[in-house]
Length: 451
Image (cartoon, rainbow, N blue to C red; front, top):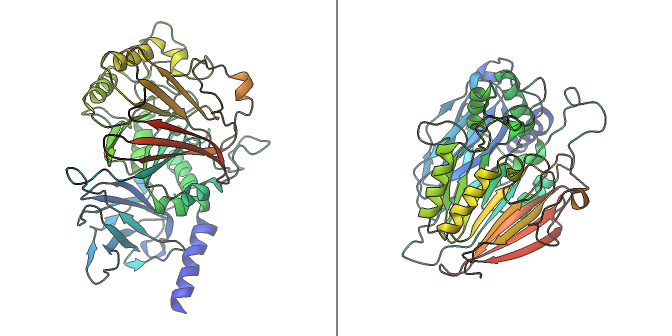
């Protein structure tokens, strides 16, 4: 009976209190779970677990190999602080490759109970032993969670939050968030308090909690979770936005070398992911006499060299705005930074880099763009948008893209699943786009050795 009552208390906390921001100072004894747990990066010898409390509190994770609870391990405790939104990143560093683990999240020493499994798995050590494992990746962008008192008057912009349950039901191993993962409003973007408030409100959505716990999450940002609409590198509060982004996501790193921003890299099994920042170094869209760059010189050169050096069967490049589209609408690469875009695509061609797939968002509709370059290699751009923000329902008739592949447009709430399978030298990527209820919209197969 005690366990049942405690379960009900935790469930009430997640559903009844979750949307209330955790900005006010509370005593440690009254701290409750605000959101999470969420799985961050996962490698062979280390996994990150994220959680957020309503006030200063201590989080710890106890974990054990699945089916072997008699041998338990414990992360170092983390005390949450107001300056980082009472978030915690806990590192499970006593793990072995290719192993499933169960865990308990402790808040001030008390184990929390959830209405879904709390498990994680480490990446397999397959190299020089077997073919790489099959695995799946969920992706998409533009998650708007309504809050009437701060939203614009009129019809709510966000809806159909059940999409996050539909993503969870696909059981992805990895999820890559492609920006606009929260939408800063006018009261939010000019202060740390406002940014923490907005991220807390969005992250606490009840429909999101099961997905957070079920898969490993990686993220980039775009304008709405960086600053005001169409923000660029001149945004005066970008340092604060960077701090808040780091607090709420569990990427392996944040920025290149001594540079800041959300740029990072990770490998899952045999596939490499390059997570790019198209905001921190971006020149102004409409300044004709400014340097014309979306990525900045150092980040662009890093991407080029990293792609040339990669031996992954597929190279996934995540970036907030569309890369391949020829559309001159919105903030597409071809619209504002065509010279930089063309130099990147020319480099991919000259270096004979195979199987580059850009993962993009921003546009509030989904499409697959692609072309075969002079070396005979296909380059793709999978745009996936929106999760819950208002869709661009007239995209098919009002957005012209010469590189759009036929029958790959989706102008409603949706998400994409990328499934990698096959032997090491003959991998294949199957892309399927689903609507908010998990119904298939379209699918496309790409072969590693496609010509």
